[in-house]
Amino acid sequence: MINPPIEDVLEHAGNRFTLVVLAARRARQINAYFNQLGEGIGTYAPPQVQSLSRKPLSISLEEIADGKVEVDIVTEE
Image (tube, rainbow, N blue to C red; front, side, top):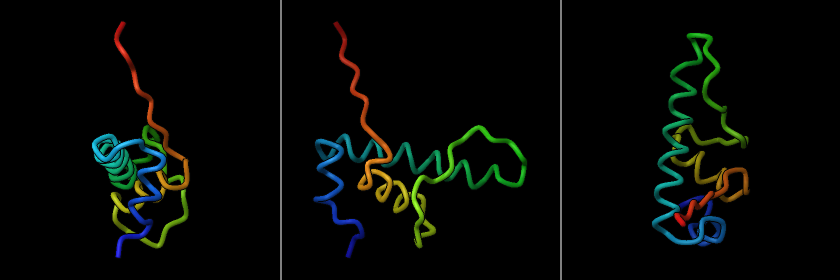
């Protein structure tokens, strides 16, 4: 069982393709944050939710479901 449910996460992302890209990008940022902790460099944002999960992708999906990460769609004119 996936927690949070995908239906809840899709409400915040719009469609499943946007959700995949958004979750993957945020998971990479979370992973980079955990990797840089010992170096003392603060270039990446820490996780925005309290999570029992240790996997960056699960944490990013929880952030999206809580509305902590938003989609910014840029349109060309």
